[in-house]
Length: 429
Image: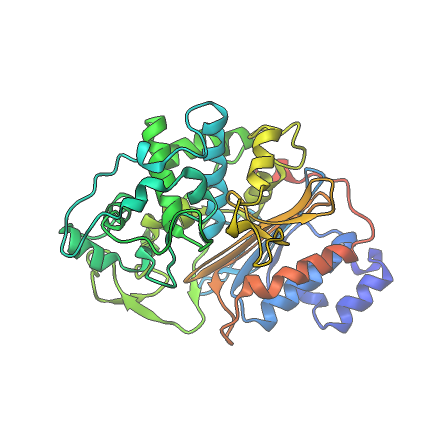
């Protein structure tokens, strides 16, 4: 596309914002196919990356199941001036949870489990006695649905999140670091719950590690292998995988990660164990994040996953009944406000949900945040889906990038007057 062929409204908007050259690749790298009708997304992303000092980002958008927009912005590797590509892989953090939830719902469809089964009936991780450990009998009341909806009884604000206590857990269990998902669950079997299962909502990474242990028990496969077989392969997704913590284990096509404040932390991996390392490379136990936050994927792959639920009657992953269960509100207090009225938004099975109207439609989304990366995946009730990925977390003022860009992508989408009919999936998958 040239400036001569661009609508005058779009050209003036780009020029006024001072980003015309960047938006079309003449200065800072912008990759992917430009389309004049989708200029609001270009304007948003180029200005956002600059204003918030983001090294690199990607945005993919689908409409009616078609990939209409896929572009990379800035650098995947600042030092070597390598541009982010639409197919670049990023750590997606907690956007991993919807993937895990769908795998559980598939097992329920096949009759391998029920959502209201007790987790202890399927969990084969053995508790281990360690100093001051004691099994809380309320574990026997936790259901699979509780874990999906963050109502299992763990509240990291009242106690702690085991994912940030890797070295202490390794010491307590008398194992060599790094700890794995099994170890985290094993350790927490010796810790008290923070509330009775089902009585409250409190976001819990641990619940999703319990779910992945159950997936492994029922399927007889490792979690990642099962996920690739039943979630990714049916969608033609070939590059997404569990990420690795150390820089030298970065996957082919994966971006580099940056911390806005260049923070350091104790290393969780030999040979830098307990020595100061970059917080995004070795001070977070990424391999143990697994089902709750360990995946890497491209923005294109994520919107391919999200679009699998556009038509509940033709989903390649779940039945219409299972999709309805995925968006359903929790019962009791977690799904209602203090006056007993249904909450305007809530956490369903693996997704944040905001019902729209009375026809069963909803906006659903999930964000992800770990040192060095942020992500947001949105499914909108009008058939639009988008994913935005960043290779840093927070802007220099300490504000969440996903939080800042959320409403802005909605605004950019609303500015589009004419949507292209192209489908770029074949190009980028």
